[in-house]
Amino acid sequence: MTFVRKRSKGNTYYYELVESRREGGKVRQNVLKYFPSAHEAESYAKGAGIEFRMAQENWIDSTLAQRLEDKLRKLNSLRPLPQEMLKRLREKFEVDMTYNSNAIEGNRLNLRETWLVLRKGMTIRGKSMVEHLEATNHLEALSLLEKMANRKKEVVEADVLSLHAAVLDKIDSPNAGFYRHEQVYIQGSKLTLPNWRKVPEMMKTVFGEFKARKTRIEAVYSAVKIHYETVRIHPFVDGNGRLARLLMNLRLMRAGFPPMVLRREERRAYYSALEKADKGDFRPISMLVAKDVEAALDLYLDSVA
Image (tube, rainbow, N blue to C red; front, side, top):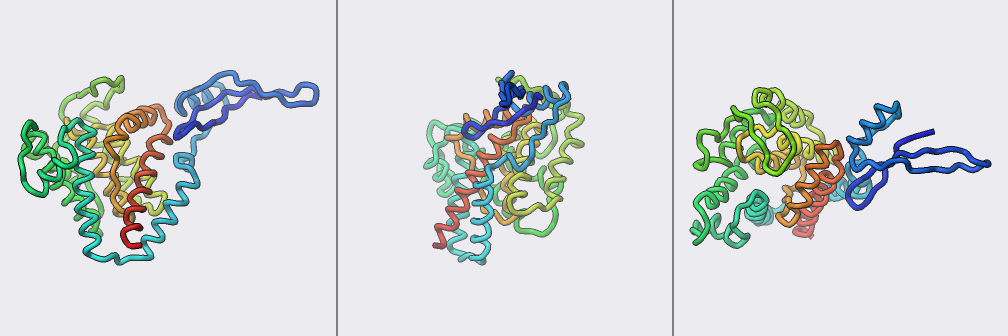
């Protein structure tokens, strides 16, 4: 008998092709082959006629998933939260999210400089005008995001285009808020992006996740899907990473979660996790997001303790 089994190491999984046979009344197992990703394991299993499934529930450890649900339930029990506290947390998030999301994309403003640009309107010597605009534009996008998160109206294509327009305002005005009309490539990656003509149709998967109105841990899975699909489709010439992180937060916030931040220090793990998702293994990116969601929940709960 031959089967594929899943093994875990840290935040990721690998897979083994195992041969099991009975010898002298004992069952012996021999590992025949290793697979670094779910995609490769699944492809082999299909070709060999072996059943293989990668359940969504395996994307996040069950203990972590339960903690997220418990902490969200506790936070909901404390609502409505004090307005002054919410204002302070919102202001902190605006600076932290702007700094980290831009830094992941190569912006050189540090956290303190980002605060000075956003809160004091200062110009930082040695930093480009584009880097300043990336900060102020992101703040404007976060303002739009909050309005979308708090309204009852569904998130639609026009909302996504508006968020992107805010991200690229005065940086690349001809492409701000418009899907790409050319083939683009990701430097340093072997991934082939979808043809630009397919972008509007492919983006319907993103809008479908918003329409599903999933709650609790299902909303976290949905947020990961939205983020990944936006990055994979690469619907715009530029600004896709920033937009993907904004849309992920929009999905979480509409389900009652506080906004979360993917940190600059996680950049290498973040890109590695996205590459593994390209091969069908969503556990690394899901675990990364889930841990940062928990950090956001802890921040809010500690603030009202």
